[in-house]
Image 1 (cartoon, rainbow, N blue to C red):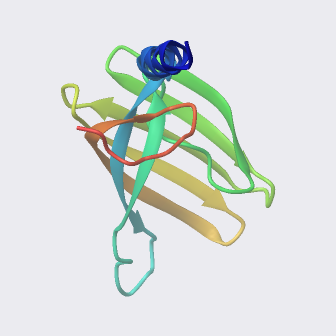
Image 2: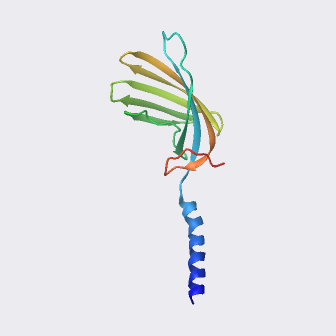
Length: 139
């Protein structure tokens, strides 16, 4: 009887794992490269790259720290957004998908010290766990 109970318990555990994984929301893992440009800067800032995990059908960008997205619009082939920050700076941006695996965009920011623009490029690098927000790729 103990052997039968142990076997049923193991079979139930194995059967539950795939169901739990199937319910985990899959997202898209994006590698995003940004290049800042500021008028009057003697040299260009180096580009930075980060990974972001977003739920399917959600934009592959997030608000900066201490900022919030105030307007977000789904476009036929991309997204547009506006952002406001606690320090009074504002930004607007847009991005356009290049097929399903890449996108390009720009964000223009107005700050009390001046203005800057940021060129953006994203490349889909796999799937991720959208609920956890992890950006590790699962190809």
